[in-house]
Length: 104
Image 1 (cartoon, helix red, strand yellow):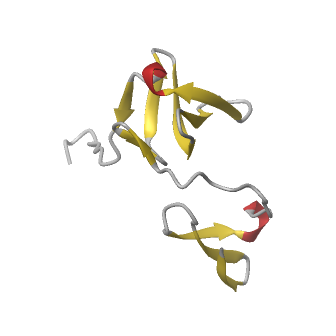
Image 2 (tube, one colour):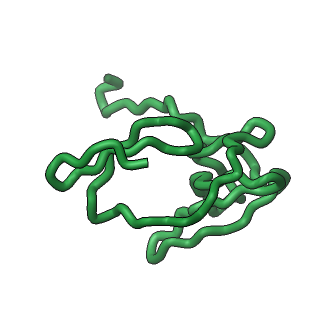
């Protein structure tokens, strides 16, 4: 649901997670899609970054009753795949860290 518009930025509330999101107006499209209301299956939830196999990963963009829709990390085009719980190899933690060459 759109809450407000500030120049080229739209503030909206997710109907699934109730989170406030700020997005560029050019990236917003009207949708008649209805969500299932689910945000989690097992240990995986909406917006998790997940490992699919040794060469691919993705982010969960929708949770259905028995599977996830995952936006895969393909470099040349967007690809959305329907992935069952057993096909996910693991989750990449959101709170990662990195160090520079001086270990800072």
